[in-house]
Length: 145
Ligand code: CA
Ligand code: CA
Image (cartoon, rainbow, N blue to C red; front, side, top):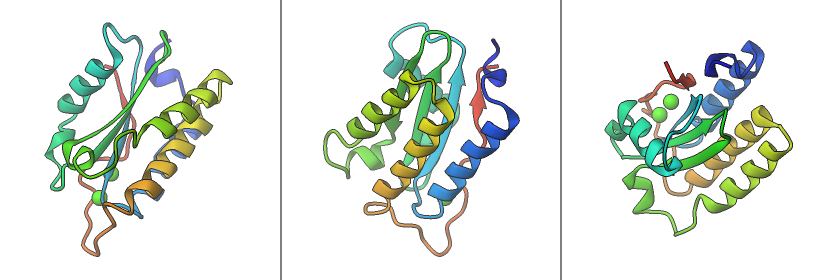
């Protein structure tokens, strides 16, 4: 299956709406990338994608990437250094654990939407939205070409 066909158009719209909703609370910029397979270590792969998508170019270095490879079921969530320098250790652990529970039940869209909104709510304490906020990174899902 091509990553683009993993979600229905309605599910894609739902996920992008969740990103939009989360980014109304926080200046953090959230993206989702879907790969078909993940060759090596999932964290390394997520970091590579993060850079490829120019996610390190936000003003506050507060990009967040949710990474999922659909064939080997690998998942990671990573934040840029602005976030890592600010939040406590284990910041992503709770979201990670809960989203994996959703995935185990096959609830990909629900899990991602929940995690995106949860990330927004947790980031707001550290990166509240500014009145002149811009959408620095598109809210569209990124798919492996
Ligand atoms: Ca923004
Ligand atoms: Ca955005």
